[in-house]
Amino acid sequence: MHFENVSLLLNHILEVINEQKFCWLDKHGRICLQFGVFRVNCIDCLDRTNVVQTAIAKTVMEIVFTKLGLIAPENAVPANIRNAFQVLWANNGDALSRQYAGTNALKVNIFLTTNENVIQFLFCIFYISKKLKLHGTFK
Image 1 (cartoon, helix red, strand yellow):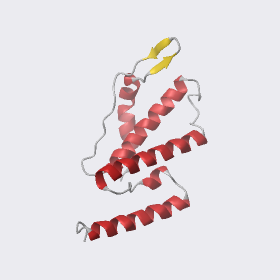
Image 2 (cartoon, rainbow, N blue to C red):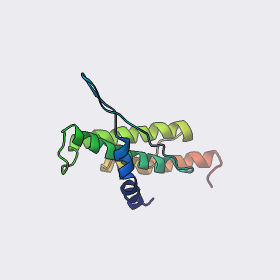
Image 3 (cartoon, one colour):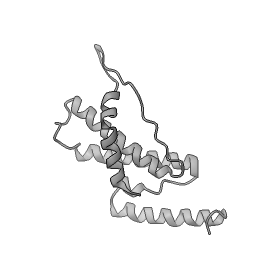
Image 4 (cartoon, rainbow, N blue to C red):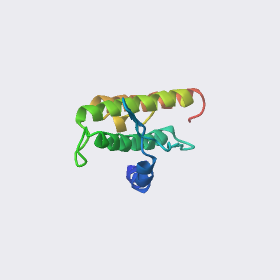
């Protein structure tokens, strides 16, 4: 997987992301209306789909936090929020993968980067390859 391509994609669609805006309501009513959504699909790889969805969601989160005044435009998202976001999307990838493929996502280490998760990732690959061999889809 070429992660630099995800950055190129984000640079290419950043204007569209900004034009679509986001829904923002307060006690006085609507402040901002969202005009669209992104549908991401990779025909042969749920992990790639989730990586792109994660990148778009992270970009939107940064835009929203900046507009709400929670972070300055030049500042990064605080580590605790970034970590919660990574766990959320890793769980999202696993849930989608279990629905479609019957196993957790392979790219969990992209979102969770501790040594324990690398070991978990390697075990996951071993488990999936054994499962595929058992079902006769991998030789």
